[in-house]
Amino acid sequence: MSAHPRPKFTFVGHATVLCELPGGEVVLIDPWVQGNPSCPKALKKLERLDAVLITHAHFDHIGDAVALCKEHRPKRVVASFETGGDPTPVRAGRCAGTFPSARS
Image 1 (cartoon, rainbow, N blue to C red):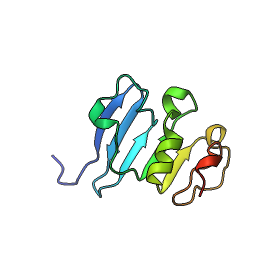
Image 2 (tube, rainbow, N blue to C red):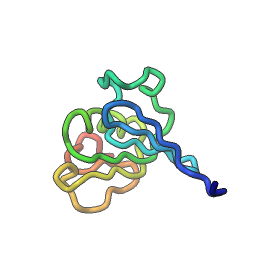
Image 3 (cartoon, rainbow, N blue to C red):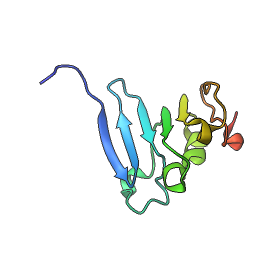
Image 4 (spheres, rainbow, N blue to C red):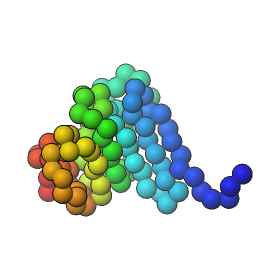
């Protein structure tokens, strides 16, 4: 067994996965929690969110991205060009492209 710290992955439901990194950072992949019938109630409210990763723009993969970005102001939002719409890097606390209402 390795002595190196490992990330902890929690299946939230459907395609959503919560990743807690060894340094304490929290990453949410395909952020659909509120309307997700598979998401446990205890995971519907996040205390911290440092990054959001979006695989594609179907509602069940992107459903809570804007609300969560507005609430937590993650340092990074990562999405494909078709989803994000802007190839420039996302700056701290901003959501890119298809989320203009979430920009600071």
